[in-house]
Length: 103
Image (tube, rainbow, N blue to C red):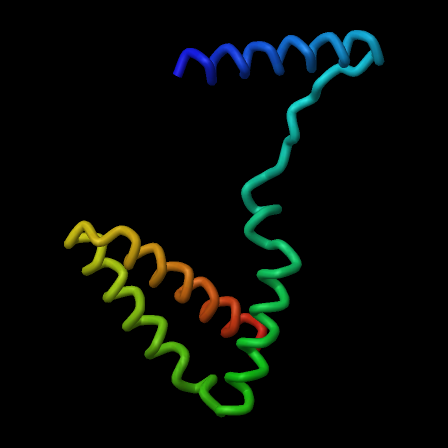
């Protein structure tokens, strides 16, 4: 553990010297959570889900599926199955986005 901490300190010192020599001031990356969640990958996925649902003519069943997912998500959270609840929440979000795009 001591070796790892010493190596980290050595690298940090080396980086600070390099930054000072080249006039670099480190700056924190600032991103909103929504920027990450609404990435291009998420948008592409939503588009594919929409196309699949349109093909299956499943749009009219979405409100019922959304309500069932909400109930299942709450039950999972009550049973402390947080990973399952989070997965259901993500699916719920996708279906709600699908409803918005379908309108």
